[in-house]
Length: 609
Ligand code: ADP
Image (cartoon, rainbow, N blue to C red; front, side):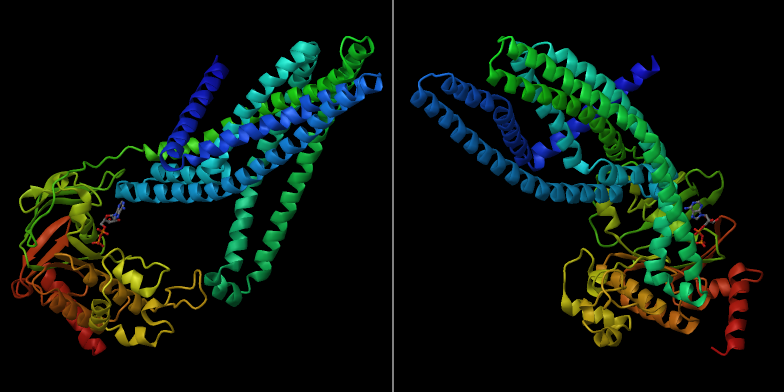
């Protein structure tokens, strides 16, 4: 019963995956269907050439040998020969063209799927990036759609194999049924036994694969670590090359051992297949020979039956094997469909944000991270007027970054609401809403692209603006010195001429990116941690001047950097413990801000900064 259920499920999965892919093909590249139709014609031509035409040629020649009219029968024989040659030529041309064409389409579909996947991943709720279940679905979709299933062409190519073999099988069965019908049960019986041995071998394949997968992962990890230049320092300085080499050799031995064992276990089944094949051929020859000798079929029919028997066997074999392979591929590729339909938790609004000036209001906002019971923020009430510069301070883990993530709607609040211009941010279209912000997070990311692309991203390119911003963040002179100036690649990931920027330079570049975006609300979430206090103070001061009348939020644990802000919010005990101007807060006896400021001022005095 459960096996029946499994088969039903597998069939359903196959139907769903194949129809999904056919839909993509019809929408994006219908020429693939034309390609497969052409190939079916080529396959049919091949069978006509292998099975039917030799019969006609042989029958004509036998007639000539047995004394019939030479000129008439030789003419017919010559006609069949020429027809065979032309058919073969046409078939080969079609096959060659369609194979080349298919390779190009395979590349196209691989890229298409990668882009669709990246696009969908970017649209998914941000919280999914930390959700192990969602990440597993994403990884399975990636692997399933590339390696394991062969992607769109891998699955549809397999589907084509099944269909084309069914067509060929129907044709061949008709020929056999009319001339030597007993061949059908012989081929079927042989196939059943061979599939049995084949399945046993496949089971051994799966067991070996599972055993090898772990060893392979470790081997690949060591191999990449040894060849990744980023690890080069540690590997050289700690002399770990030998140790890693030893580990790699050990793993390699283990892999060879597993392959050997697999070959030994499969040997008996392979012998079984060879023996059944020999019996199948022997019985077929005996039976068809008997029909020919007793003059029930012609010599031409004899040749046709031999070819048809072999064709029937192979088409049946290809259908069974092709279907099993299709089911395996669909099983993997279906992960992609599951990824595309992964449920979204966030409400998606459609309102657009119109004005340039915006008032932000947190109203009784409380928040706990998904899958966590602990509240990180409780009952936050805060209004940031348009053009106001707010500093957010507090100890590590006080919830400052979380507050920014909520404002940018990377997460939704657990309780309360965040309003922009009096409207709950959930009601805005996410894409439109995010255009309001230029944020530099502590863990900002630079890409291994040209430097200017890291600043401009998807904004309009403006060289003058780019250089002016690079000058403002203090990077202009550094960039001018680079081999290819603003076009120099960042990192050496795929170009040895790429540049490795210092921590400080990277942070300046991230700030340049925020400035280039020219959004109405700018946020700096301690992207200056790698800078010394003086450099940070300078950057914040300069940034504050550059931001001008825009709304700005600065997070820093160095209070000196916040002095120039209009208001300061001190986060402590999951909420805003103090709020006011620098002067108000610094003058508060027993105040958290006053205490922190005094402690840091002391440090600066001691350090003589
Ligand atoms: P701050 O920016 O003030 O240093 P954060 O907002 O980064 O503090 O973190 C506040 C609290 O939330 C910390 O206890 C931290 O461990 C927790 N936290 C931060 N990010 C996550 C997350 N993605 N999942 C679960 N807890 C988190």
